[in-house]
Length: 246
Ligand SMILES: Nc1ncnc2c1ncn2[C@@H]1O[C@H](COP(=O)(O)OP(=O)(O)OP(=O)(O)O)[C@@H](O)[C@H]1O
Ligand SMILES: [Mg+2]
Image (cartoon, rainbow, N blue to C red; front, top):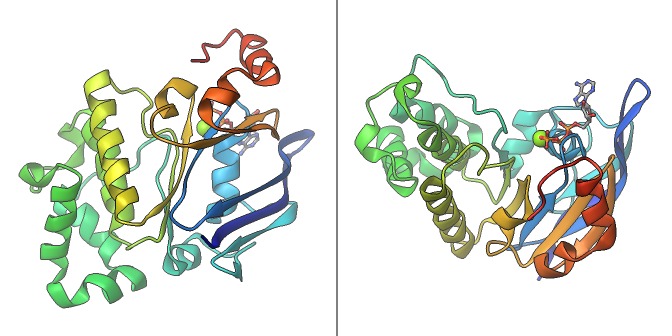
C-alpha cells in the first residue's frame, strides 16, 4: 500500500474559534477511512481544507505526492480528488443527465470519458448510482436519498481517485442508507479511495475498517470502529453534548 493523502499539522481558525486544530493523519491508496465527531467537531471544515474550499491558517495537505495546500477546488478535482457536500447542491435547472455531464466536462472527466461521449458516460454513471431511470427529470422533484446519490454521481463524473463524502447518510431512512452503503462498497472494490464522515459511528461500523474521531477541532482517537466505540474520550465528547453516539 502506498500513501495517497497526507495531512500534517492542519489548522483553521474562524476568529477566536479553532475549528481544525493541528490535525495529522494519513490515508493509504485504496483505503476507506471514516471520520466521526459530534456536531461542530470540525469534520466539514476539515473536508473544506482538504478539498480547497477553505484556506488553512497553517499545515499542509499532500495528495498523491503533490502539495495541494492552497490550491483551488477545480485544481484539486483535476488531480483526482472529488467531494460531496453535507447539504446537497445540484444544478437545479438541469436534468440529472446534464448534472453529471457538467462534471464530465471537467478536464479530468473529459480525459477519462471523452471518447465514449459525454451523454453516454453520464448515463453509465447514473446507472451506477441507481438513477438512470430518472435521467431526464430535474433534481428538485427527487427525494433526499436520490439527491445524495446524485451528489456521488456528479463526483464520479470527474473520474476521481479519491472521494470525500461528507455525511452521505444524513437525513436518510434505513433503506436509502443501505443503497448508499452498497454504492460506497462497490466504488471501493473498483479501487476508489474513500474518506467518509458520519455523525454517529453506527452508520460507519460495517463500512470502514478504520475510523478517526474529532472533537473541538482535534483528533481524539483512531482505530477500528469497535475500538473507537469503546473509547472513553470519544464517549465523553458525545455524551458531553447530549448527543447520540452509536
Ligand atoms: N465559515 C465559518 N465561520 C465561522 N465559524 C465556522 C465556519 N464554518 C464552521 N464554523 C464553526 O467551526 C466549527 C466546526 O464546524 P464544522 O461544520 O466543521 O463541524 P462538523 O463536525 O462538520 O459539524 P456537523 O456534525 O454539524 O456537520 C463549528 O463551531 C462551526 O460553528
Ligand atoms: Mg459537518
